[in-house]
Image 1 (spheres, rainbow, N blue to C red):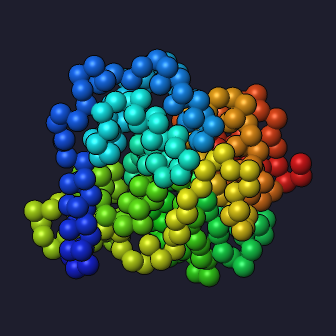
Image 2 (image 1 turned 45 degrees about the vertical axis):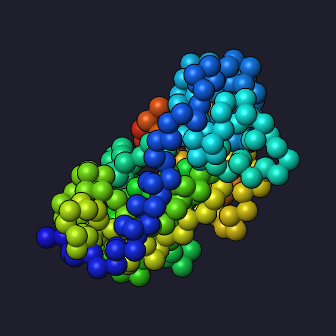
Length: 309
């Protein structure tokens, strides 16, 4: 059975406050202002590209309109034009909220499971055999980690590997542009539906169930959480300032949201933080084909940085 969770009551009450902030506020938008104009969409698209690097095509207009309506209600604004004026004001207070609203945060536990199998069965043994893991301490970067399901999946796999490889240790850095999802990741609390992809033996070992069974919530155990640090990072930053290099980098289902030139610039910066011989894992729809980068393909959307560039 999943172990009882005793430290979740405060988290649950906090979630209640958060959801209350997004209740419907009918009547704020006037009927003629409920649609995002082409002019405002263009202004916002340019702003998104400048701030995040994400390129929004015209087909994303309806999506952006739907997401921003929540912000208009919270701010008691009457039109999207009013929102643009608020967003572009000199104080910049709304920029973080805007980024949180427009960024996509699709994620799952054990998404693309062959990546995790390759990590523990091939990548880590290679790194160990060639002396590339300094002091037997593996550093992993989960870039665009969203709500934390990827880094916690990695943590489960690395903990299992550690159990049969004494002297091996590890840490994970999870980064994302959205402060909302990083808050969720730090809380490490998920619905039982969220954790369905986790194999039952790992659920029993690494999840704590809420003492209030009506909540249907689970929390990642402290012994995994202690290995993970979360940090905000915008791929458009000139320097990422991570303070270290990594033997393994997961950057999955993020590059697809950028145009090719921007994706290349991001991948070049990511590559600077991967040691020679280290492994880069991309999403199922992503590829390094056509990019002049020092990698060899070693598996399905798995790349190894050349030992000598």
